Image (cartoon, rainbow, N blue to C red; front, side, top):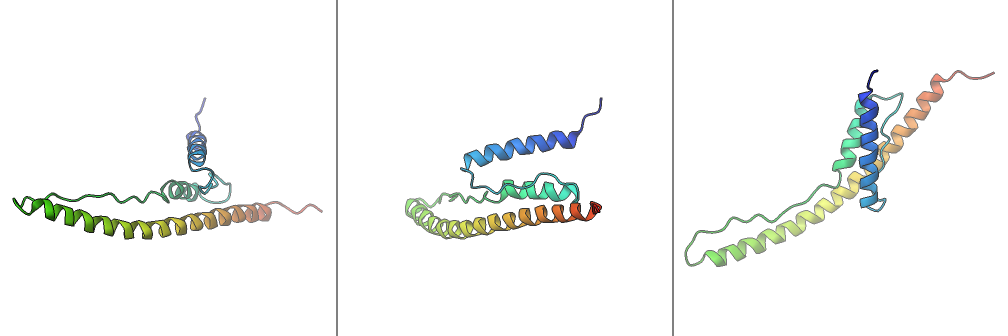
Length: 127
């Protein structure tokens, strides 16, 4: 009895994507997980990109000042500046996520179209 590891991985990926889709309210791109015409690595890259496209979080990380008297003031100033920077970085990250989502949708459409065209090309015409 032989085990098809690729088939098992496809099932796991499909389940993970279904869970993610339900968590995001159906807003996540849905990549094609396999095809007969394009390399399996292509679909693996699509899957990985789908899992990562919206993973851009910036956290607040401010080192405490060791200055005895002015330390708390310096800490508040650093925190305020860092929060301002995070605000603008988050704005840029939101635009990047929207762009990435559109690119994934385009790649998914392109891969579906290519699979269909290549399958049609291999199918002999019926006369």
